[in-house]
Length: 229
Image 1 (spheres, rainbow, N blue to C red):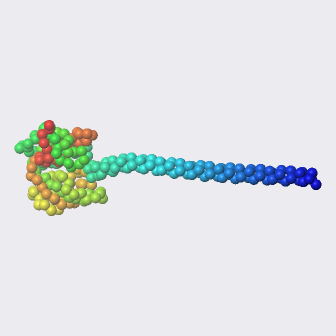
Image 2 (image 1 turned 90 degrees about the vertical axis):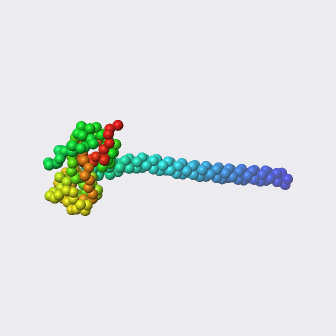
Image 3 (image 1 turned 30 degrees about the horizontal axis):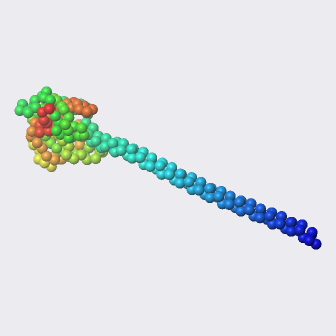
């Protein structure tokens, strides 16, 4: 009987060892699975974080790009606004017929001058040369262009000889007028009103400054000029 028990005990012991071994493998597999899951989750988290960081960097780059274009846009807008309403011809042509040359002008024809007026961007401080100076009544006017453009206010300047049937000078402030001058598009034939007037000598000036080249520019009053430095 004792001999039979020993083999049975051996079998039981072997079976128990197998069970423990299987349990150990199961535990190792579970541990490995959990570890693998943890690594996978960590990798996914890192990938997501990296993706978010990349998106953030892309957004920042886009913002920088838009900012740069915005600056150019501002420059573009600034250029458009600067030119709006100031499309003077490169050559203003001769003075109207019947104008009387000024003998008492501070700056005779041929004088080198500095322009103090800011009738258009780039004009103030520009150097110029007097090509004509006259005694007349000179008006600031407001008018509605004939080409459908926005109304123009305080346009400087229009001389009495550039008005249609103006009557005797000077016209009173608020007088209704029709402009025969063609200083810019939509001006000739436009109807408007006199804002104010001056009796000081008025000049035609050639201007060549920083890309602004105009001949026979009309008009600049004597108080809007200074001797060239």
